[in-house]
Length: 353
Image (cartoon, rainbow, N blue to C red):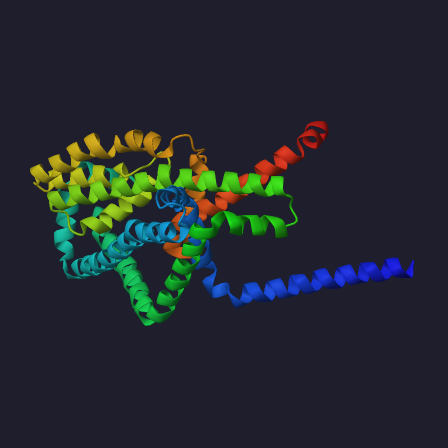
């Protein structure tokens, strides 16, 4: 009896110590959680390339991992850095335009669109106040972006440290992914079958979300920014990013941006610009989703549109711009966990309703 009680005390003490030490370690590396998650997500996306290159290089996984990591840097991180720099610049330009433009001019611009003026009056909104509201929104948004840019500049060292940690982990995940996965499976107490199930559904959903949703949205934003630049609209890359974000919203899409832009250009007298945006929007932006999504997704399982929307918006709120990727990644793990629960307790659920 005493031995059994002592054994229980030993087990509880050991697991309590294990939880405390683990929580302390997580607290210790809390500042690097996002780089770690980024490394895991990107390794899942690019591991098929690393595996293929390993065979091409005669089993030299280190060289294959290095080439794959450099490819990921050129395809993911450099474009993000470039877009971020340009967006901050264009946001500042838009802010200066908003505070320097005569509000009477903005009022005249709104009044050149009779339908919009009538709709606003019908809704009980004074059309002359709309430019003031728009200018205020642009000022606040641009000021927020500029503040984040300044903060990023003052924390360059931390940013570089996190990027180096992420690249370091990414290299080893690409090089020794199966061995690392086997070690984790051996340590975790869930059971190999459940762990494989969770990983496969998580990885499949992440790849499908990134390839079938995010890449399509970025392609639409890229094309939209080109159309806006040709049409002479200020800050085209900034508007392209906005279109990409709207492209993530099921049932909405970039048409929320380019359709009003084409109408405004028409009533402002820029017929050629309006035609470029309208024709390009119909011929390219409205069809690229149907063309690219089946090619990029293949047989991957996609998440429901509503969950993609919630995960992207929630991810941006929780993690900033990183949430565009990390939000769907966590949603994928959420789906996989509940799918496992359904499979594991199928008979109990059927018996007890």
